[in-house]
Amino acid sequence: MEHVFQQGQDSNAPTFLLLHGTGGTEHDLINIGKMISPDSSLLGVRGNVLENGMPRFFRRLAEGVFDEEDLVLRTEELKGFLDESAKEYQFDRNNVVAIGYSNGANIAGSLLFHYKASLKAAILFHPMVPRRGIELPDLSGTSVFIGAGKNDPLCPPQESEDLKELLQNAGAQVQLHWEHHGHQLTRSEVEKAAEWFLTI
Image 1 (spheres, rainbow, N blue to C red):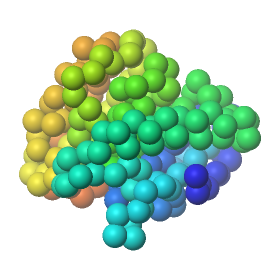
Image 2 (image 1 turned 60 degrees about the horizontal axis):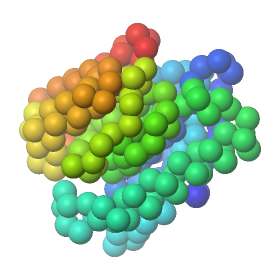
Image 3 (image 1 turned 135 degrees about the vertical axis):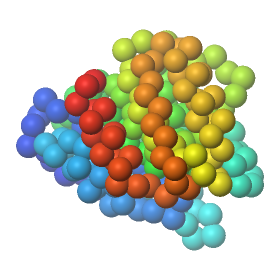
């Protein structure tokens, strides 16, 4: 997968897996990662799916309707890439925190839904529930921050509430932070995520 890796100053700090929104690139969330943990290594990844020329991490059938078969395939692909990257760049595979926005948050959520211990923690900005009606792995010891917008036209508030409940029922520690905005990623929610990160 196309990606960029920046070595951090602190080898004990988590490595951040950075996952962009629709139409983004592997560079989009670099500065967000630095805001949240300045000394962490950063692994920015570009989605392998194109929608009208815009990179995404998996296909969708319509706005808000995921191609579940492709989602499962791409989630496995991303997990494999992460496993290989840990060997290539020599970071601790058990100390990876995902930061995802929109489509990137959805595939980060999908990693949690499908693979036990795939992530130590996750910061999900404006995510939806990746899949419904499946049994989640044991997420005890996993921390998740969800940043959501009360007026988000693409991600109804109920999606964020449902995601929080599903993750908590699987054992994860979840903090849900609300902004009175739409689908955009705001500085204040990044700052809240940075505060939360210091507590995990």
